Length: 120
Length: 107
Image (cartoon, rainbow over all chains, first blue to last red; front, side, top):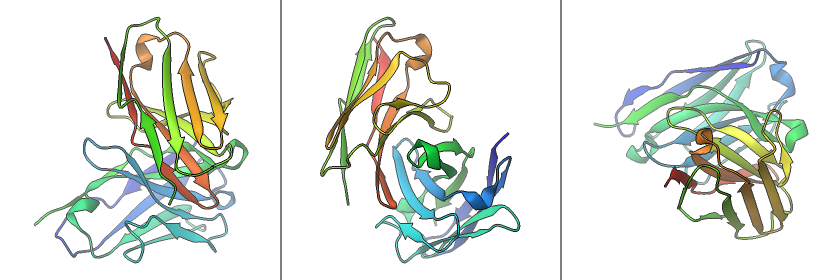
């Protein structure tokens, strides 16, 4: 069965950096576009970034553009999110999400999330 | 950036009642709209894709309609497990945005 397991969350000071990882299993990772979605405590969902199945195309929300970088290592079935210049408003649970081609690229599998807290 | 506006923010209904949730886009998204359900402490679950297609395993009481800028999620008869927060999500080429959510609570 499909599993997405995030790691790398924690507490970081404003201006600091953090790298999130997502280990994927149960499907052919290299065939699918992957996303990061976040949710601030008690708030709604916010789409963060996408990387295409071949890794050539990457797009970001305006709120993280220039600070966050999405990448993938298909040899290790792993998705990454490098987060730099972190701000208090980046505090959230970060979900690793798989898109499904045959459901109009909607999100069919989600990880359990990893909490990132930006605080001094 | 395409903005999705969901209404109402909160819907207070009893089990067995019909729920009608709205999602309006700031510009046309054609039929590239999905609906998700999220319960406390859980990741969201895909309900509807392409505005009106039920995802795998989703009960028939959930239905979606609309195209362009106006979309509706209908739950024909609320079951106890349907009380949750619902989000719409649009796809515009590579980019995505979520609506702010509608909470369906027990009256």
